[in-house]
Amino acid sequence: MSDQEQHIRELRKRAMRLPLHPGVYLMHDKSGKIIYIGKAKALKNRVSQYFGSEKNHDKKVRQMVAHVDYFEYILTDSEFEALVLECSLIKQHSPKYNILLKDDKGYSYIRVTKGPWARISEAKQVADDGAEYIGPYISGWTVKQSVDEALKIFRLPSCSRRFPQDIGKGRPCLNYYIKQCCAPCRGKISEQEYAESVQEALEFLRGGSAQSIRELTRRMEEAADRLEFERAARIRDRIAAIRRMGERQKVVASRVPEQDVIALTQGAGRSCFEVFRYEHGRLTDRETFFMGETGSPQAARGEFIERYYSMRDRVPPRVSLDGPAEGEDLLCRWLSQKAGRKVTVAVPQRGEQAQLVEMCRNNSAEQLAQTMGRTGREASALDELARLLGLPKPPAYIESYDISNLAGGENVAGMVVFENGRPLRSAYRKFKIKTVVGQDDYASMREVIARRLNEYQKEKASGEGFGRLPDLILLDGGRGHVAAVQPVISAAGLSIPLFGMVKDDKHRTRAIATNGGEIAINSNRSAFTLVSSIQDEVHRFAVGYHRNLRKKTTLSSTLTSIDGVGPVRAKALLKHFQTVAAIRKADFEELAGAPSMTEPAARSVYQYFHPETVKEDIPKAH
Image 1 (spheres, rainbow, N blue to C red):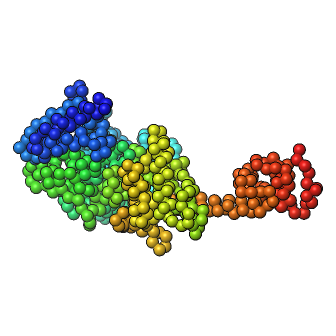
Image 2 (cartoon, rainbow, N blue to C red):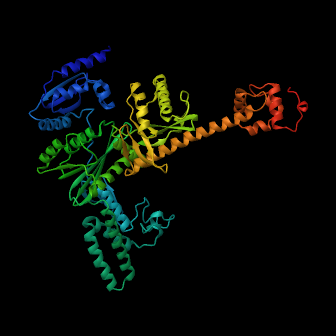
Image 3 (cartoon, rainbow, N blue to C red):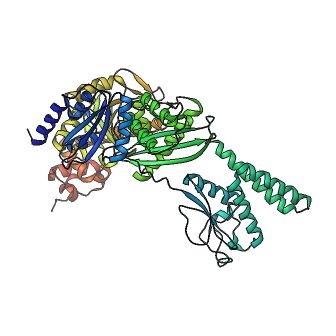
């Protein structure tokens, strides 16, 4: 037994002596630094779990346990007091293995340059540059959105060109052609008209869309009374643009006046939480938090809520989540106490609230995908598939298998691999079935999986190819296939999630098969698309291999009908020349020089393809 194993055993013995009492535990490393703080309803049960079997822990917990030198604990009167104390201690010590959020919520400003041809932009801080700064505002996202809206509505430039220096220099950019910029660079707008547009944009930013519409409507009517129809038309177009922008914002509006929506997307070794904040029924802010391995989604949500609201003064009356959080009742009580009123934590299942959660989750997936070199669709599909199948995290490495034969002849199997939602063709493998005679897909699939797992035992030190275990295995078949293969995986002492892919009578993916039934996936669009593409790909690969094998067998049987050419020699000829057509075109010397060929066999092959040639006229090989 190693020193580390002995140390873990000693820590478990000590943990087993803890009381079955609520409290907070603090894990220390060799230097005495606190590396993790947690709460427990029963300290003995919770702390002893850390020092049990590694199989029960995710990667993050295993890493933390490996660095624990000793632990201490503080008893509390209730689990709720333990939660409050835990939040306070984490804020004080910032332990390495707790979810820690960087509170970079600074102020934002709207910056307006002085003088003619003023420019409007967003700024993170006030600089001594002579510009006017409007603010401060708490939400940087809101400021950026508002400035972008104002520039588009009032057709103000967002480029880096300077005016009047760059007027008349170069062609206008795309924004001019899509009517989102008045293009001062062309010199088609006067300084006075430009200044009016800037002023109207600032009124929009200061007063909001409703007040801006009222003021612009008044100006439009005045212009019409003065017969200034061009000006009236221009103002009318701006009013229409503001209203269109408002219609777009209704998409992210909520009938619940004030709430936060929180969604989690997990990837391979990296996770992302997205927070949408609603006030007065409208999306007013969003925040994105990236972190490393987070383990169980349920535990991660619970821990995130603790950390997030520990550093936020505003707690809304409702928090909508994309899935259950650990200790929801306790969190509701803590948030209610912090807010001074009742706070509800909910997981919406249908209607508007479910759509808002789905939108938040899609944004979380997109943000995570951007950092991992994937598309948002791929990240979302893997995350949705993990939720659907009850996996602890999205399957980054998926293997899929299919059997192909013709009336039990030429039994073969294909294996395809999808990594991070994309085909990894370098990892595809082909199998010839060796132990099964006749058409028995169950036995064939058992053989293939057994051979694959045997290769893992030989190559696991490399961690590549067969030396890497999949996060998920998908079989092209129903629950019968799953029931046939599951004992093979269990006998190997491995725990790999295994499911089947079921097709309907039109050969389209219909459901996911488990050992005990089926899971419908049609309503889960992203997961359905991913599973369908995997099933189509593994079927294509297996059938393609089977057809090629049958073609070679047919060609070999053609050659074996020639005197002096048996199966071995026919196979060698095909391998050397690749096709029968190439063998037909070869001259006698080329045939005689091929592997496994003799001069008499070469004469027979040459005469077979050139029957008009008399055998005695065939020249001897040099």
